[in-house]
Image (tube, rainbow, N blue to C red; front, side, top):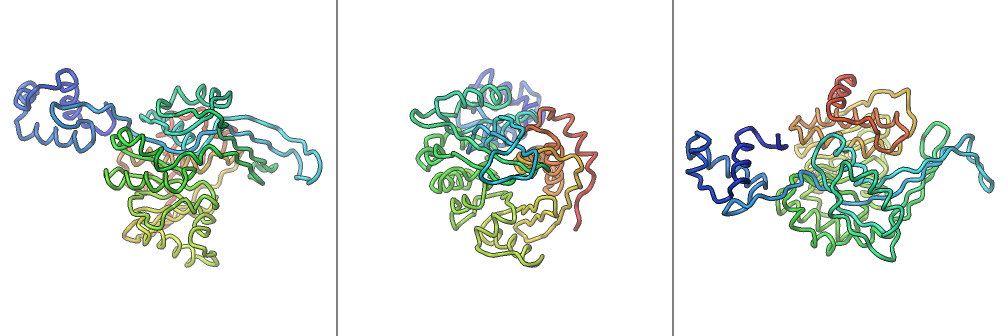
Length: 374
């Protein structure tokens, strides 16, 4: 069944696709339902952006748009403690990454309809990205730029799998500006959810927030790092969900957390800026969820004894959250899906775990149990 539609909506949409000029009277007759019910169904399809205008023009609808970076990840894991000014023995891997791309692949593997809006160089790195990503994600909206390199990310991991230092060549992302976003306004405004990372420059971020607010499209924002927090505007109304860590929050508000009250205050500051729902993570420590009514809920991610690589932990958490939201689970349960996906992703050497499937993911959720504290 088409995601987000009930059985009657699906039947009406199928008939309209066959003949867009059917009248509501004829549709009601064919489906053996009354006119008022049919009118409500058509109104619902229009609100959900499956239809536009008369005669019922069927939108080619991508359920989710992921906007932001795509890149090649080069991971080097140290075999011994890092020594400066000399050669260090490592194990190395090359994988496909980028925050928006990682979220998109996760969602595609979960069998959701997802498109990636990004920029790439016309080079071998982009060809590698396409090979890995296209089976799960629509890349029709990825534009290649001459005289630019596809983004790359290089991370140095300690013996325990924790990141020690990373390097990012993301110059092409400077082209992800407001004008670039506006050139994709029509497909963006016809989607049902947007996930955006902060690799876009500030004007690009502002334009996405503006479109989401204007079209009433749920928007999930994923900060990338402390330095990218200045890409956010002052007014954050239009952001439905913000998934941010403590360091990034401290950077944005220029406040250091000294105790638990400071941590809670940071979350409330995000709400006061206009964010409807904020999740602040702290690695393996308790994460905090606060909604626009300033209701606070803590979650304790389960201890994970099998950590291999934490590189994709945050992206997989966001994808799990979005999966839960798209399945219409309550926010607290959607957060559990985020915790579940992150828990299993860090047990994999891949930034996006290769065994991720929707039916298995549902089973994995049951193994995690209730992480809610209060």
